[in-house]
Image (cartoon, rainbow, N blue to C red; front, side):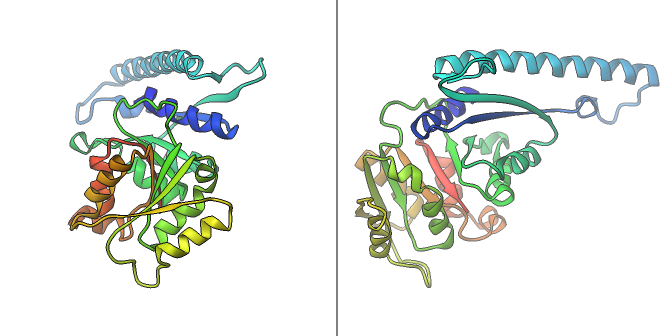
Length: 270
């Protein structure tokens, strides 16, 4: 997961002369202690020391991996040198969701691995990034590695909703750098939402030419991803959770299905 996330962040950073900030969440020693097991003060002290040492070893191991991957992806993670896209590493103690919320609020884009619902991993981080940090989030599936086509043909999912509008507004730099932009739309536009023709005009005022691709089907999430594959898009930009996250979790929704089924990177905003 570290590899695919850093690879996509690196590609975006190089395209836009940006900086990559890698944040690792360090578990507190107390969080690594066995729960529900009575311990003497001496045993607790020894185990706390061992847990702290384990955390140090994990940090050093991760720094080594980061240094190797940074070089592989053309990033500069050396403070004493200049040139190239900068990459920094920071370790912060705390819950992943809280760290994402804090670090993400002053980030242009938050890059996260695709959540693994079957293992209950990553969903709280994605929710925290979208709702708590309020920034666009790039979701990277599996071990997918970006190639030279990444973000060259961008598909924009449009239904006139507020999240879709925020996704459009927060991705203008990415859209502007693309070679081709396709607006994907199907079904009814949400109440009070601008039709796709107005989005084409919105882009046109910024010198961005976009074509419209319409799709049909009872399941917009499935059709959206299928259409992306058909037209050869390498990045999908879409709004997330037009309804509340809790409502979608309980009753299902397009966002959950898109995230679960995607095999391509998705830039989302709420």
